[in-house]
Length: 390
Image 1 (cartoon, rainbow, N blue to C red):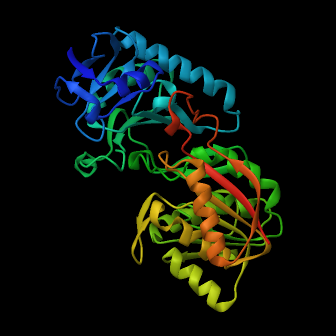
Image 2: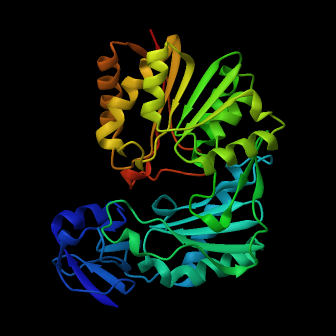
Image 3: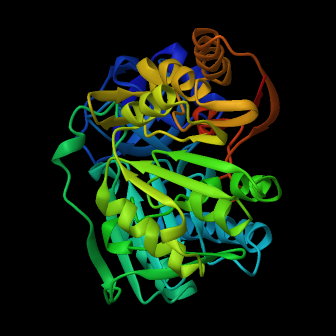
């Protein structure tokens, strides 16, 4: 095990339980990605052990103190994570997050459960040394039909494009789509396309909160992906639902999700289009909506490159111009490094640009199977504001 000596700033955070060490915080020592490392203070105190990386992080801390993260320890963490899901996941839901990375004590490791298949997603190839431990626990305790390994590197990692695609590491591949339940809703997911399998379960409780409010409304779902919000709205009485996404492939899957819920997609609209162009056309033609869902990705390519940090205020402004008086905007951000204060600032800037005022009806976050650890501020990544416009 290689020793890495960290500076006083990093030491302070590690003593609070923070799971990351940044390259600029390492004063002495070098390690290759995936090497086991011992983190020490300048005085020689052991602060934790973990795995080295060479991206935007120098190391992820698996254990605080001087003990290594062996298989028994990994399995104990997985037992603890599973026990939480046994409490917070209702019997009508079989697609959910089983392990939520840093917030379940396994930095950079996410495991999603899709009825009978598991998708293990790593933030970095440096975490590959613990995959066998994860697979062994899943096979013993969950008996999945198949286990898929994939990577979702942080957008701050410069080498994020060099990682391999999803692969089956145990069991058998799914025969195409796997239909999962979310309470009364049904969605098709594609585990072999992990991590983006077709459904984001962190939004489950947001969808549940909105269910009683859809009745009789006109709904615009932007960046609709495979239409989870659209299905929820239509299934709960929305008069019309318009789903906009740049990907025709995803919109086709959205239509399939409508059919899975005994909804006729022909009664609603699916527009393969850049969101900003669609919003501008609705403004010019005077079309407005009672509910507008804004759940953009952190980055996307349309008429230009969409960046949540640079374009969120503009997006809110464009949405506000097509929201009917008394209508609602459901504004979302999934960037962990963006604070609630900054996110609310984007919303305020956008409303001012559109000349609109609003009331905040609800401030929502990720579902309980995506817990946020007190020692990891970025774990409270999902921010949702339900706004009623004047």
